[in-house]
Amino acid sequence: MSKILLLEDDTALNDTITDFLEENGYEIVSVYDGYEAQEKLYETKFDLLLLDINVPGIDGLELLKESRQEGVVAPAIYITSMHSVDDLERGFESGCDDYIRKPFALKELLIRIETLLKRAFFHEEKSYIPIDENIAYDIDNGELVIDGKSLSLGNKESKLMRLFMKHQGEVLSHEQIFKHLWDYDEDPSDSALRTYIKNLRKLVGKEKIVSIKKQGYKFITQK
Image (cartoon, rainbow, N blue to C red):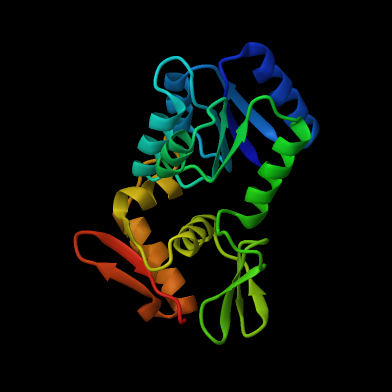
C-alpha cells in the first residue's frame, strides 16, 4: 500500500481528499500546517507528497525545497490556486513533479497520483531499466533481472538499488543514502552501508558503483 503525505490546511478539503484516497487503497497521513508536515517527513518515508502551497507555518514551496536538499526523493504534486507562469516555475524549481489547480475533480487527482507512482519517479514508461547487456532493473517489482532470471534483494539493498536507479550518474552523499535507507529511529551505519554496497557490487559489477572519496557513491550504467 502506497503511503501519501497530504498537506492541506482546509479541513473540509483535507477530509474529502483523505477519504477518497483511502477508499482507493492508499494510506494517507494528513497534516494541516507546514511544520507538522516537516516533522512527518523527518519521521516517515512516503511514496508520494501531496502539498498545498499556501499553508500556515513553512509554505509548501519551501517545505519541498528543503526536503529535496535533505534527500527526500518521493514524487510531489502541488495543490494550488496559483495560476501565473512565474508561480508554476517556482513550483518546479522547488522540486515538484506535477501540480493540480483548485478546484479540481478527485478523479483527476487520482489519475495524477497513479501516473507518478506507476513511473516510480523514474519518468520511464518501460518496466525495466537496462544496466548492461545482461542485467536490468525491474521497476515494478524492485528486483534485479540477471541473464533473464529475477533476483530478489534484501530490504536495505533493494532501497539502495532503487535510489541508485533514480539518480544514475549522480553522486549521492552518505547523508542522502542514510536518510533513504534508515528510518528516523534507526542508527545509520557506515560499515553496514559498505556491506550493502559490497553486496550490490557482487551482483552488478564493482565498476558500476563508484566510490567518490569524501563525497559518496555514484552508479554508472552502460549507455
